[in-house]
Amino acid sequence: MRPSDFTPRFSKTEASFCPFCPGSEDATPPELLALRAPDAPADVGRWTVRAFPNRFPALRVEGELERTAEGPYDRVSGIGAHEVIVETVRHDETLADLGLPALGEVLWAWRERILDLGRDLRLAHVQIFKNHGPEAGATILHEHSQVIALPVVPRDVALEREEQQAWFGRKERCLTCDIVRHERRDGERLVFENARYAVLCPWAPLSPFVLWIVPKGHSSHFEAIERHELESLAEALRLALRKLDKALERPAYNFALHSGPLRGAASPSLHWRLEVAPTLTVPGGFERGTGSWLNSTPPEEAAAFLRKVRE
Amino acid sequence: MRPSDFTPRFSKTEASFCPFCPGSEDATPPELLALRAPDAPADVGRWTVRAFPNRFPALRVEGELERTAEGPYDRVSGIGAHEVIVETVRHDETLADLGLPALGEVLWAWRERILDLGRDLRLAHVQIFKNHGPEAGATILHEHSQVIALPVVPRDVALEREEQQAWFGRKERCLTCDIVRHERRDGERLVFENARYAVLCPWAPLSPFVLWIVPKGHSSHFEAIERHELESLAEALRLALRKLDKALERPAYNFALHSGPLRGAASPSLHWRLEVAPTLTVPGGFERGTGSWLNSTPPEEAAAFLRKVRE
Image (tube, rainbow over all chains, first blue to last red; front, top):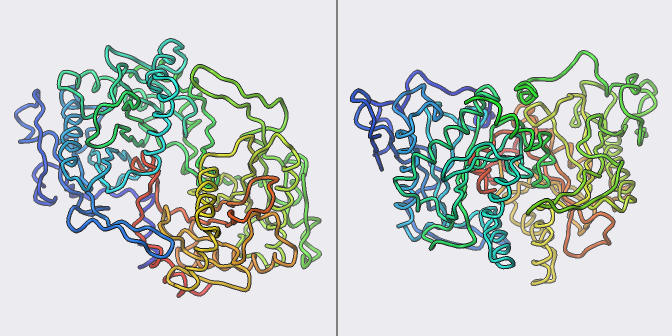
């Protein structure tokens, strides 16, 4: 172990060889899924979206799931999955550049991986997320999202669901439906809506320019999405990314899918959303100590700015 | 609002003029506290540690504390305090360079500010923290810690206390005392101990090389520290920082004080600690979505490495 083992932080890691480009399929572990956009031109190879296990996984499918005590601590074995979903065949293309049918295939790939991983009953949670740009944690710049499946439900995921369930328990209404209704009526934090989805700057975000992409109708599980809804969601996501690109000069960003429990039945209290967060600030000692983040950009200002910029 | 308003992130912000240097006292808001180390040489001016309000505060003392509802949301007015504690008169000196009596004065200044802010009954929490280096969020490089006082108890602070209280409720023993006892006996994650304090790599840390500096005897509130304990704590903190400097080539880092409730009586279940975290990784989409962090450096490896390096 040398200090250099811990200092990849701000280095732009892009080799001349890209393992995610078509023709390099041998350089990745065996393929889990390959999709082809209906409008893909003949010259882009045999896939437009491709999923495979991460070569340096945080968790592995192989082995026994064991839960053990160690002194005052709890340990669970690192059973799970860590996958990469390459979102385009073109090395320099971003998610915001994709055509709507091609972006729809990326969303469909998320659904497919969630449903497939859910068949492994040892797994308790599947997290879909993306790190775009080195400042957001990307180490390979060819556009991709990631999937991590865990044998436990992470704390913040459980807490968020508890809050939504507590709200429903008191009011017999979905908290997120209440929020979406309020934001559509109020308009101050709303950025965009089409027939099915709203893009909004949420109340009290952790950091500047956080965006929610959320179904306007009630839906607890992302993976319940139907083929005919893909293009509408792709439109909302692409618009959000293009507006961020214009407003903030192509920022690094992360997104994370918040969805209902794996293998869970449709729930009246939970409501899925995709949360996009450009990387504009560094969490410091205050954020690490309290879990609260200082944010000097009110969501109303961010939304007004994003409504104005043309995507 | 322009894109450049949100892009100070990785720029090294150090002007030729430093408002924290002696002689620039006029450039800061009026002083709240000035301490002088007992061993300070005559040539270092009239203070060695100096506290004053942040010129660009996240919260302000002035105004009425109001809690209001806004649609489905809760709002509380930004009443509080945001202060800077300059830790040395020397522009280029780091906390790890200080003599133990001088470092002891820094710790004493934390205590003084917590006790003073606790007199304002509108305030519910005082967070002592530090951002060292631009990658850790520092915008002025002259060494300083910060104080933020809030009208609410932040979520993670409340959750941590609830966990400690639940453990005590079941076992009638302090969780942190159990941890410290286990780590001192086990030794694998222990880095250092003197008569009063232990330095250890905690179980399941969010990121590589996180360190706890924790009293070995039970103590719920940092601000209950006595003058004669300062040098022992300063020794533990300085050793931790010097070992990190050697092991990781002077990394940027954050620390945050975890202590009992403001104005609270001594508690048998709560136990204060200082948590130091070098900035080696970026939280990405997975971390933002789940609150769980991927960490590829086990604390046992970090502790073994830190025990070996000479501070």
